[in-house]
Image (cartoon, rainbow, N blue to C red):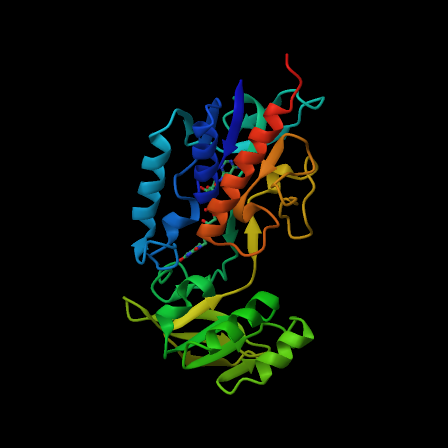
Length: 309
Ligand code: FAD
């Protein structure tokens, strides 16, 4: 059995595996793909101390760093089920989608998240070429240019407020008749001079010139179609944690995030979680890495407190 079994090889999982291996613990890493969401990223300019990199480069660096250590990599596999130890200090079991069962004294869940997609023509084609999901990451790329934000919940309205300080103009599209964000955020948004809010506006298509986004089409409540010229579309209709397989085993938030304490502990002793799959505020690479390190140190702390066999 493993001392530490890490699930997911994004920034959080890779950091956790490295920290565990450096403690001399028997470490396993279920790595469906190294890098996680980072692999889907074009330019990265907020990975502190590296002014500019890109997804494939950072992912390759993450993999190379993990491979410098004695980490058993279980490649191309997804975890399908967690069976917690019957008593504290016992072995947890992870059932993989292949049916194989792995056993470990501690588990670190770092299965990340995925952005909910609009599912309209042009969205996949222009992803990272004008279609963006993260204002903290990609906002500065649109400095002085017009953008559209889709989604009138808290994340959409926060994104619009954030972007309004950087870009020339923000058009916020909300599918329903009303914004759903908190009142204070709505008030802040409506006070800004370079923001237009359109309600009953359903995005139907993202347009481009073959290279980059050039505009967006939406339908109004009466079925009329309208076009907006824009350089960027920020899709803000939800971040879905990859935790469906944990329902009923661990405490999850109403959004499906794994509820963690300030040591990355979950509701099950010996099971820790890190990164975008958890309730940690703000989903970013540097944050996920820090959380992975923290989860691993917490697993170590847990292991040294187990009764001597
Ligand atoms: P993830 O990166 O999501 O990795 C989780 C891994 O676990 C994935 O490989 C996944 O396939 C795997 N997995 C899923 N389910 C299972 C399972 N059941 N069993 C085993 N493995 C599983 N952040 C920044 O800081 N700067 C940026 O510029 C930036 N740009 C971004 C651009 C895009 C397009 C996207 C999508 C995100 C961007 N982010 C950026 C956010 C950043 O990528 C995430 O915050 C970060 O990758 C989270 O790391 P993580 O390890 O928690 O999860």
